[in-house]
Structures are given as structure tokens and as C-alpha cells.
Image 1 (tube, rainbow, N blue to C red):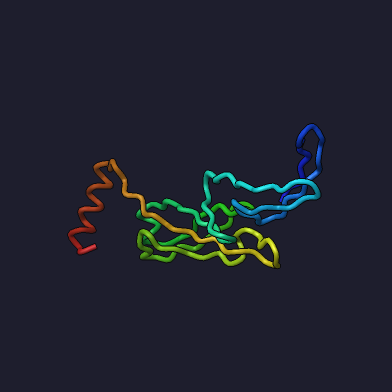
Image 2: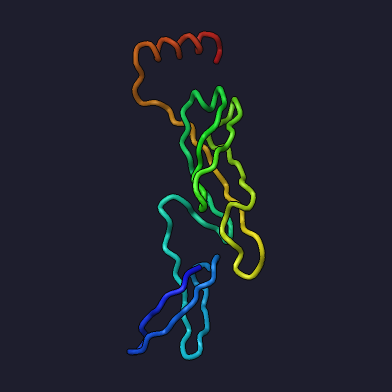
Length: 137
């Protein structure tokens, strides 16, 4: 949410926008109605109180497992990636989404991991991958 002072028809008005409000919602004030338009975020997309984020991970992390730092609306959190995670796998962070407008609690955050395929490999990396391919991996 946010509080702002705006000028409407020459007079200044103090308005309060509740947390969790979504685009297209109208708020009635004493002498005017305000329709809210929420700007898109550069990292997150939103559906109601839930937010979505795509994260690229290296092939080695997807194959072997480990941890990554993932952005949330409150800052970064660590997420455990299991060994053998496929590209396109989604994880849910319960309660890490947007606050519900007329209720308690928050939505969830959904993380979709995309396995990044390297465009260029060193000779050693190529040799290692060819060995793995020879072993059926």
C-alpha cells in the first residue's frame, strides 16, 4: 500500500491505496473515484495475490542439486534444488506473494526454473560432457 498527496481539479487530496490492490480496481473517495493501474514489475508477474518468477540455473546445479537465491517481494531467500531437477520445474513459496486486499495473509510465490544450456564450451567441458554421453547420461 501507499499514501500519496495528489492534485485533483486544483485542490490537493491525501489518498491511501491499500496493499494488494490490483489493476482495474476502483476506490471511492468523498468527491471522486480513482481507478488503479498497477505497473508491471521487471522481475515478477502477478495473478491475484500470487506472484511468479523465472530463474535460470546451470545444468550442473540441475543435475547435482544445491541451493540458489531467489528474489521475493521481501528480499532474497534460499531455495533447495534437488538433484535431477528438470527445466520447467516449478516450486511454491507459501505466503511469499502479495498481501490479500480484504483479508489476512498473502498469496504464494511460484518459481519456475529454466536450465541454461551453455552456448560455448571449453575443450575440457566438451570432453567431460562427451564422457557422460558415452555413459548414457
